[in-house]
Length: 119
Image (tube, rainbow, N blue to C red; front, side, top):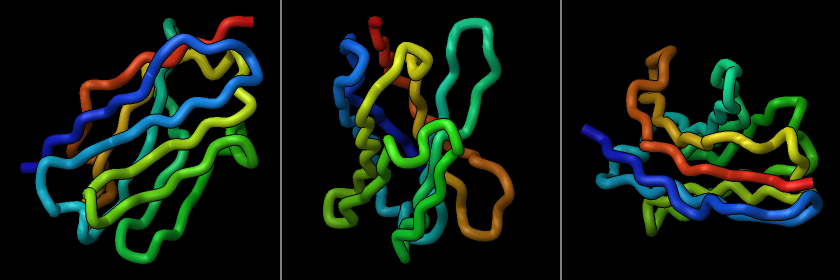
């Protein structure tokens, strides 16, 4: 069982930067993908980006490409989402999730952290 805990959310102004963290309770990140998703009020959850834990390859949604960056610290079993140039439309609850290698779904989810961007 993998437990994920997000932190770092808050209220910022448009154009500001914010870094979210996602810490895992175990070393199970060793094989798989760790992803960031977000859900705004009244909207479906959407993919933000992910990172291959072993090799560090990253992938981003078009809406955040060039503004958001995902990294990980394997020694701390923690993943980060660096968000720059935040826009009001980035306001959402942000979740991290873990997809085990060989699986097609993200089976483990954190509780989410709120990010609010004021204009």
